[in-house]
Length: 417
Ligand code: HEM
Image: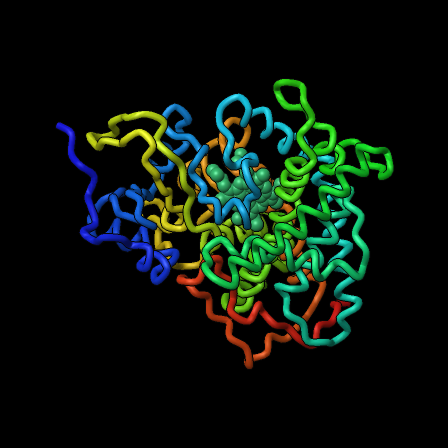
């Protein structure tokens, strides 16, 4: 017999979501002893789910669509309006291949080399000074991402552009100031990149084949039309912005090396398998993407639960990465656990689940892992630094997105000989 999904008996839980942040869905799944429950957010009925079985359901394209799922406030800050994240079906797959085509092994090597040399340049320039690692990482990644993508970037614009990419991400869980900063940042970035797309098409700016600038400028949709210049700009920003967003994982990884010093020692042993396990554990353990949304395509029943056409569903990423049925001691930082991870596409989902080619899973997961490996290798092996005590290294599970409060300050940075 069909059962109704456990209901929360409140009028609206929007405030609770703001108060509980990354644990909002987990807290209620515990309370209901269920992987899914129904609540109301911003006046709308919403089914929240967590765990690998729920993730598998969420990534079934027969049952869910992305069109109409992301609120306008997210599209006007984080995603860009009507871009790849909001597409479905064949049109989505075609657009997605455009992103995947940027990630060939030689292109990934190029990005790694760029990131490496930007860091070495920084280490040289710092000379004992005191720096906020998060900000420095944004600048490093912004320079590398632009160079890799064929986007010209003057030295004096680096900080502002990097900050704008950061502000688009910082807006996702925000109301008020942070939200408006995100909108302003997106408007500025879109104007900047749209102008470059126009210059490429007019033959006034050279773009090398295989770079994101070239591919976004010349891509044709399934009807054979070029993207309008604004959409091309939005999709190019969908490459640049998330590369810069890796600064968050870099700050978290540096924090892990600080709080669990044995991990830093192991990173120094040069064991490549360990380096990857460390990166995976950083992506699993620390809070970044909280949850994703999709809408029910048409009525269906799953395990006796009825899902109604048009209904909004949220999949808990953070909660799934901390699901105690999958992860032994989920709140302990243990890179070695990844020796045994079987590689399921649905139980470890910091960048979404399922398949990147056919579904919405992040196309940048491979370059994220590589960028982090290069960076943690350098931070462990190429430099010595002190982590001053007069800073707040706490990580909030309420503020979305999260970050070590101080951005992770380091000082007396010295290159190791
Ligand atoms: C999608 C996270 C890095 C490009 C996503 C999704 C998440 C995510 C959670 C949504 C998956 C879904 O909707 O099912 C992250 C995190 C990153 C990161 C935490 C590390 C900082 C990157 C990089 C790129 C990228 C480096 C560069 C190309 C995209 C794009 C999508 C996406 C274009 C939309 C894919 C689609 O809708 O089909 N990412 N990502 N991301 N990511 Fe990433």
